[in-house]
Amino acid sequence: MRNYTKAALAAMLSSMMILSACGGNNNAPGGEQGSNKNQTADNGAKEDGKLDPYKITLVYPASAPKDLELVQAEMSKYLTEKINATIELKPIEWGSWEDKTNLMKVSNEAFDLMFTASWYFLPQDVTKGQYIELDDLMAQYGKDIPGVLGPDFLKGARINGKLYALPTKKEFGQGFGFLLNKKLVDKYKFDVSGVKTLEEMEAMFKTIKDNEPDVTPIISSKFANTWGASNYDGIVAGLSVPRGSKEIKLSDNLEDPKYLDFFKRMREWNKNGWFDKDVLTSDGEVAMTMIKAGKGFATASSLKPGKDKEMSVSYGVDLVQVETAEPFTTTGDAQGAMLGISRTSKDPARAMMFLNLLYTDEKLINMLDWGIEGTHFVKKSDNVIDYPAGMTAETQTYPNPGGWMFGNQFISYLWANEDPNKWKQFEEFNNRSERSIILGFSFNQEPVKSELASIANVENEFIDALFAGAVDPEKTIARWKEKRAAAGFDAVKAEVEKQLAAWAQTQQ
Image (cartoon, rainbow, N blue to C red; front, side, top):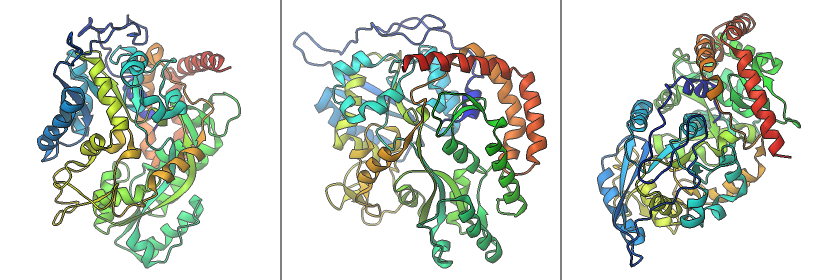
């Protein structure tokens, strides 16, 4: 998700020193995008053409499951047969991810692959030369990948025309709406099949508020993030190109009457008592915990086909999803979940061979996603699985680390409670998702990183309270704009307009 809060926050990271070449990788000179274009990858081949043994390190955000080493060993056996490699799975807790991965980067730690995304520092890391260019490597060792991803995914993944990380083949865009407690949907016989507007959702919230005193209608104000993403292709600092634009023209969200009207709606929801008491700080995890406990009715979410079933498996509570906005595809969606090859990799070619398998090898991707057949799942049919006898979502020992982060989801197994046509629905979803007019544009924050840091500090004073409807929108936005101007907003706007105009010239 393109989220200008996170993008601005990322700009506050201290500048990383451009480190010297490691493992045969050439790093970018200061101020340039990472430039390993002419790099010649060492694929560890002996004179007889056989590959030397090599350990691939994969770093990604997740909790370390009980059976991590068991799955790692099984994957290593398989990879040894395929590319004479073993694998080290290195999950890092989300709460520690930023600090630990920053330390890995600045300390020049050797690793091969790391999860990255537009909303999690990819543009900044590319500028600093953290990830190597992939086009030549993909042409040699990842020849199957372009055919799997297709041209739109690859276009959206590029930064200044170059490929520094490969996106997961998954939903290409975001749907927007809510996840609802199915038990309450059934109890009140809510017809969710035709719901398309916020007004229709409000009728449900009122019913829950009036009839369920122990249930909160909406958990978390994070709904505002999904609403913004469904209406704007956000760039940075509240600057965006509105959805449906027929020309490439920059807009300031705080000057948009539609944005103000939304904040007024949030104010009314707050006054109605529809939000949870911790709305300023609660998140998706809190929401799911409350819904499972029967204390919550709805939480906002970005959506895709079968999202409700996936979340039901993960949290052990029946959910129903309602889409209140058609899907929309931005560069942030194309770059929403990616794997980049580190400049410190000792064998980028082998890392690319592994990536190629993640897009094409059903057995490998499902080991990474679900664990070992017979131990962590059993097959019900060729591509449908369930828990082994006696195992549940609560007792599983290798919960999915986040299949949306790796390779090709379209060859990942489905669970018995999911629609067997899920991947066909994904294809249809991707095809109907509206493409932003600036798909493929990435903003380089380096020229205005100090201003963005100041603007982020200003934003933090106001944004949560506005999203939660806790303050008067008009008065609060007026104060926000005043402080934002003093923080250097005009300089940021000028730089975005400059880069956007230059990018537009390349698209003609």
